[in-house]
Length: 216
Image (tube, rainbow, N blue to C red; front, side, top):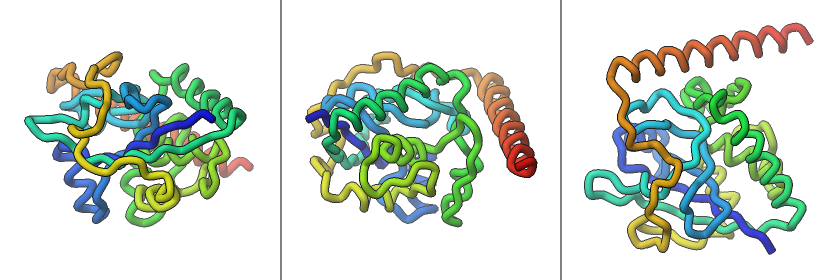
């Protein structure tokens, strides 16, 4: 029987600490992996360490959980799937891998989380929206495709699948960067330009999406 691993993390960065304080949660991030080594997790996140507001779909290395001498706390959930469910999940992931350059982290939806809202914008997700929709598309019980997904709610739905809770440094993972370019720091001017561009594209997509909704 095929399995996937859903990984919640308390990331050791200022942005992660801010999110945890705002939401009052232990974890602030989530991704999923097709291998127990967690060598490459599919999620939506920042692409570079010094560009917190410019991100999209990434293949995230486990090495992101170690920063300035500190390991993140993680919760790893193993979810067993049928062969059909795994095929559907892989089909879902292939779409994002093909369209990774067009993907954007959904800052608007992230800001609306405390209100319990999800703001739908094409090719744009938060990490928990991406994981929640991936599990829903695969047919995992309790997940609604296109619905509002919260970190706490997702944790609760996967509470029976918990395999590990503790320091990432004690988990038997693969500590390699692979294709993750997270440590490739950008120039400050580049960060500002890329962030402004990402917000502009996100805004344009939201306006087009709202206009299409009004036309129906």
